[in-house]
Length: 348
Image 1 (cartoon, rainbow, N blue to C red):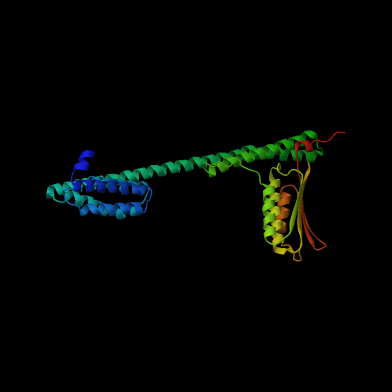
Image 2: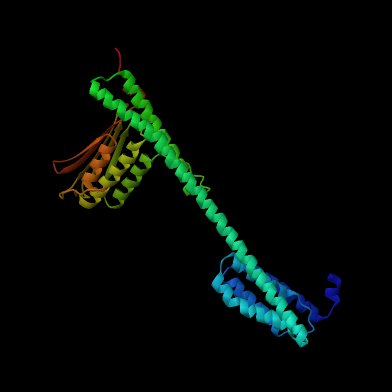
């Protein structure tokens, strides 16, 4: 065949090249959904001007864009391009044919394009059904997570509450109760983290990023850079290991730290130094942010402002205070770090 093409007439070579261009532009819609079908119609229109004795098969490629637009659910574009495609391929087939043969070609192309149309719609419906099935499975997984959260975590918290109420009514504080509270609360934290990991994995498919505790050291460095870029001279001092903090404390510390730095940018004097102190012992974490300024810090409910920081600290089992002494604002917060070891009494 290759030898016949090389040795054949020039018209045969051009016909093969035209067929090749038609096939390429027909497949182009998979990569360029909007412009690919338009390019195909432009190339297909060349068939209306070539001699009748050229033997071409590129007209059959007209089925590809009709099918592809159906799969991609490009209904409007398909309705616009299907009529000219049918006219072009039918015209190429009926030129020079008798009336009886012409109707046969018209019927053939109409049925062929209609079949491609229906097959494309069928593929689109199948893909939509698969997508709905995946969404239903995802919803079922989330429902299961919510059920686990209710059945496991809520059950443990309810038992803790009942046992704590019993201890308060009886006026006792047995070691067994303290150990139970410490162990059960730790288990609840682990269960919630596990459920959050599952929920996050279901919300972000194929995500390889592991769950991480908040980075206090990194956030502190970012906030110091913010203050320095605004002209503040800021220093920080950290005592103890803060990288092992878990639970609500690191989240709370970050919120208070960021809001305190926001207040420094709004109210403090850039000519005066700022100091951030953080101390972590076996039983407590202390945070202090010291700055100077003449304005008053804003008090507003919600997540921001003094009230918001106090609410965050109390929710984490800590306390927060703000003082103004010697023209310096001092934001200090303390959080107890409860562990099983610290819950046990020390016998001496």
